[in-house]
Length: 406
Image (cartoon, rainbow, N blue to C red; front, side, top):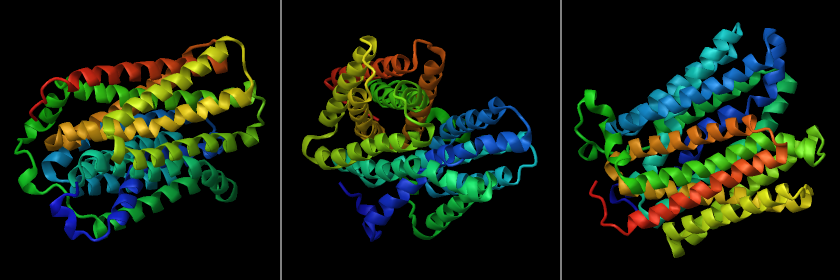
């Protein structure tokens, strides 16, 4: 259902593209600079582990920022918090590009994560402002589709920039991206959360919007299913370099192509959801997504336990499992926001924390479990998929109860 207030805006396609671009703040900031890490290590004369802390600190800023921007967007509208986050992101990009030492770079990355958090949180909340129900899930699929292009192209572009201009060029590119986002925000993005719909919450009670969500068991089930889908994805991201190079025997120079192939699976999953969700609804698509992910992930685990390591057998199941991430994410976040429209910013923030928090724990788990690259990756993926399935079963149980008044 198209929000009546939003009909004044003439270009729905532009709106969806803008929301996808704002959601891409985080993945673009993660993947673009990765090829420049060895050059950063050499330039600053520090260990690889210290350079890798720039990624960890970005995640810290990203998680903390989402918890703040969500309530701010509910209380003050969508545009001003998004503007503040974009300006912080721009300033942090300049700090990283000009950093004279690793300490300044690490500070810049922490600040950059904090600024980047505004994009995905507020973009998801805007989707709920403008759309509802199946249409919201469909639009969310298109937004995630645009966002997914970032990890598909960012490492390649980052490699080119590093080779041609050095590692600092990657951060200058992120500065340019921030400028583009600011122009779109100021010129084309309307306020979709008018004052009469904002909760009249005192600043000291700014975070009170989280309470009704955390008390809602169905909302917790949505968060569990969506977060665990990303846990499976992050297990793949952390484990796939070693699986492809050490188990499948793929040359390091060719790994990026196989990584991109599975990202295409994510794109296909979002396209499938955008078409089918209008016919079958959010809950059916969500249930189908977790069941397919669990089946594909468990089949990979069984093959790994049986000592089957042939790439032509593992890769199709991996492609299918990753293709469901977009289906699960689009329907969990739209379902969550539908239950809490007055606190859409807070709900979106909690989804982001579940997404990156459980994803980060999954990546850590891949690093801690030492039973071989393939078995470790498939074990964590299967566990995450099964927990996601259990969350959806719990969700069905909760949805049979009387609707929660929010």
